[in-house]
Structures are given as C-alpha cells and as structure tokens.
Length: 264
Length: 306
Image (cartoon, rainbow over all chains, first blue to last red; front, side):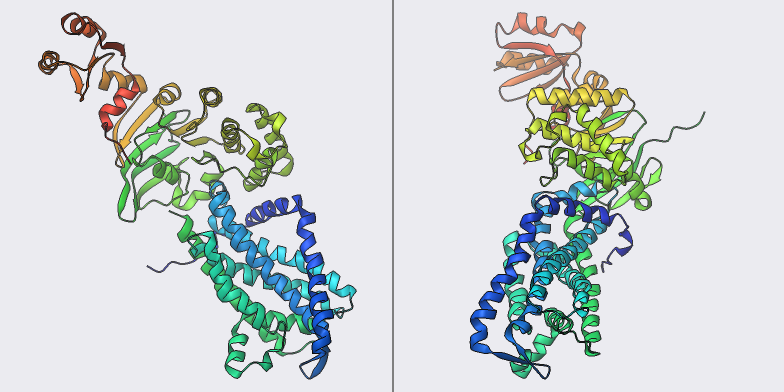
C-alpha cells in the first residue's frame, strides 16, 4: 500500500507547537545566544589568523579573495545546517521518544502533521536566530557586503527548512538516539568538508565535483557567499530552486515516516 | 421523547497490530454523565480501545462516534472536547508547572488570558498553587498525576478519558485523585476510565465492562456484577482436606477449586460459613464479603498475563 503524506492535516495550529519550543528556548536564551556569538570568533581566529598566513588568497569565481572573506559565508551556512539538523534530530527525538511530548500533544486538537510541521519550522527559526547573531559578528569584521547581506536571513530560513526536514526524516527512522551518528558521518560531515566550505570545489577531481554539486550545503554556501560578496548572479536562481525542491520533497517524507513511527 | 445521544457510540470496533487482534469487535456506549470503567488483564485491549476513542490510533474496522460525530471525519472537533490522562506522566519537563497548563491550553486555541485564569483555577483545584513556578521534575508522583488530571481539564472537556489514573500512587495520593474525580462526576462530567484497581472501579464507576482478548466478557453495575458472579458472601478454605473438597463439589454452590484453597460463593442466607465451619474447619476458614476482584478473577482466570 502506498502511503500518502497527510499534508491536509496541517493547520495553522502548527504555530502552537512552534511557540512551545520558543518558550523553552527563551528560558535559556543567553546560553543559546553564546554559541553563534563566539563560535565564529573561534573559527575566524583559527582559520583567519592561523591558516590565512599559509594560504593567502583563494581564487573564487575569477576573483582572489582573502581566506577569511572566503570562509565567513561558509561558517554562516554551516550554522544554518547544524542548527536545523541538530534541532530536528537530537532535540526532536528527545521530545518524541524520552519526553513523550508528542504523545501528549496528540491528545489535543493538534494533528501529528501539525506537530511535525511546527518542529521543522522551529528548526528553521533556530537557524535564522543563530545566523542573525553570527551575521552580526562577522559583519563587524567587514566580511559582509550590504544590503545584499540581509538576504542571508531569509536564506537561513530556507536552508533551515531543508536541513530540518532532512533531520526529521532520520528522526522518523532511527531505532535509537545513538544511531544519529550514522547520518552525521555519512551526510553532515562530508558536506561540512566538501561543499566549497573551506576550499573551492573546483580544486576537486571532476567526479567529486559532481557529487559536491548534488549536495544541498554546496548550494547554500554558494548563495551565501555571493550575497556576502554583494553579488547577484542568474545561476543563484538554480541553487534556490535546488533547495526549494529538496525541501518540498523531504518534508512529505518526514510526515510519512513520523506517522508510520508514531500512529499505531 | 427525544433519544439521548450517547457520548461514545462504538460499534464493532476492531484493532489489529502486526497480525495480533487487540480489539476484536467491541460494541459499547457511554451515556451523558456516566462513569464507565474498562477492566481487564494486561493485553485485554483496554488502552487500545480508549486510544481509538480519543483519536490517537485509527481503528481497522467498525464505527465510532463521539458526541454524535464520526471520528474519521470529525477527529479534530472531538479531540477539542475531550480531556485525556494518558498512562505515562507525559508532562513537559522543559516547562514549569503553570506553563504546562498554560501552553497546553494554547494547543486548544484557548486565548492567552483565559488560559492563564483557567490554569490558576486548576492549580487550586489540585492544590498545587504553591508549586506553580517549580519544575515538573521536582514534583512527587502523586502531584504529577494531579497535574496530568488538571491538564486534561484545561479545555473544560465534556468527556474525560483516564488510562490507569492512579497506577503507582501511594494510598494518600490515590484518595486525592479519587476525591477530585468524584467531584467532577458529581458535576455531570462523563468519564471513561481503565484501571487495574477493583476498589477504584467499584468506587468511581456507574457501569463496568470487563474485557479480555479484545472482547467484552460482561457488562453491568459494580454491585450487580458482584451479585451475579460472586454472590454476596465468600468463604475461603485454606489447605482444604479431601472431605471438604468432596462436600463442596457435591454441594452445588458456586466455587473455585485452587491448589491450596477453595473459594465458595453464596448468598447471605446460605450461611456458608456456619455450614463449612461447623463440619470441617476449626481454623483456616475466612468469611468475607464478595468483591469485584472475585468477579474479575472468576471471569478472566488466574493465569498470569505476561
């Protein structure tokens, strides 16, 4: 039997689930703010001061960029990915499995689909918050061109939805919380390294370049880098479409696997 | 006379999990203001049944109407009008006691202001006002259970569904919960409850359904069930000898013959205790009232369900 995602079960009430997570987030907002505030400083010091001396300029799209200018947008993209992916894997799994928060919610007028949608949108919201803080920090170093740089914020929402939906798919299928190591090892870490984050993808062999271009983070990094450099390019539309399609495909899959897991 | 619309109208409910039938053609009704208890050993299908009633799990076949609304199409409205205490204490550990109520109210679309008022009222009702801002993880088991009950009342439900509401509580806490449930019942709230405690069922329920293997065994008022299936007076004979066994077998009294014990069920005017006591046992005979536990064990057997 083919299962269809019950998209019509999503109502505006998903915002209540989102709100619940926001209330919890605000309780320890200071801790939540510290990571995106200081993490870029660590990276910029290590890579910018330490590695820059060895590397010097990086060729990118026909330009020579100082290494810190090259990696700053990548740090933003990685933040988007991590915040949404970890929220909708570990944190959602804890709420679902250990705290039985979803079970309690399902006894109210909320549908399972409201809950999952609320969780994924929350993951994307966390991505936006962390990106905004980090954007502020790297902007202080003059690493972002404005006004283009402001578009990084809506982009962090889209990126958050994409990686949140992917995370939720894993949450729907992993037997135990330790099993998240597998998608992280197979999916997140390779992207962290090979998506044009710390070096341009065109230094890779052709086959590796094709793989890299199939990864969502590559597109997010490209978009972020162009915006930070203050450039607009028609090819950027393709990357946006890629991320939209990725989200639109994975979101219903997340609904299906979670329904299969929780509705018995 | 207008016909009374039952709060729950379940017809031939069936639920199958991976090939095992948990609920096997269950038909029952719950009428307004009634407290209906579902009793049965582990795996009898009680929780599966009530999960279908609060639209948590879909049925495989049959028809189910709650408040006269079909659950397949009207689940959201039905859920908005029901309060549920699930078996686990699934309070939100990330939130305070008060927030647990306030945010839960928001899931029902209750406006913020009303949610606040209602949460305060309910905290008073369960005598936890002084713990409003504490973490739920700091509460005792009994307090958590009361909070779960308060949370189930946040939407002013017309039907309260309770899945083993006092399992694991100390006697004081159980009585605390019972007193509140009795108050709610007196106010006309309809209640569907599952329990393993016969004293709880006897005290709270107007009507009982004893079920096993997904089917209804018997149905009726607690006192009526006791009269029908365990008589009025019970005599237990410990370590019975051969003569008394033979006597009981030929006497025609309702009885259970166990390895080291005979249990005899009779009417008050049967004078069982005098009869047996004089003839057979100088000691080791116990006379007591028939209870719901007798009914339960007689109907569902004494074998372990594991």
